[in-house]
Amino acid sequence: MAEKKVKSNQIIATGRRKKSIARVRLFPGTGKCTVNGREMGEYLQRDTLLLVARQPFEITGTGDKYDIIVRVVGGGVSGQAGAICHGLARALVKANENFKKELKEAGLLTRDPRMKERKKYGLKKARKASQFSKR
Image 1 (cartoon, rainbow, N blue to C red):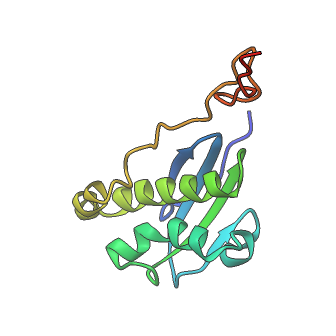
Image 2: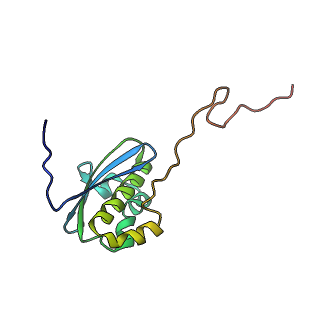
Image 3: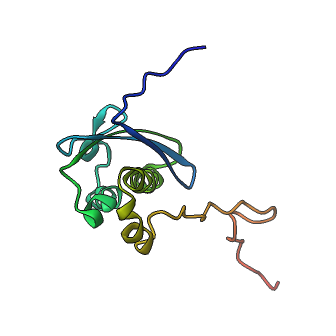
């Protein structure tokens, strides 16, 4: 069985949102963020998604103290940004237990349970029905 090389100074955490799963690796560094081999700003092209993903750094004030490498799969870009945020918050708590209170109050340690609602038979989508006709 292949053994993974894990550096002693790295912290690994998993974040989830909708159908997305993000594996976050946190290293002491200068604030460099890589998602799926690309720069975070290049991968998450909308500013709002970039703000969502970097939210744990903003709350704890540790944006320039850690480098992160993220592998994210599944879902769309919005769900992936949420998964990165969740994984990053978990990794920061592993790095420093004092961040737990701030991140918990901001709601970043709780996995967002909202999922896509399934389509029902006889309807066009989950809730959309064809227009009612009396005659």
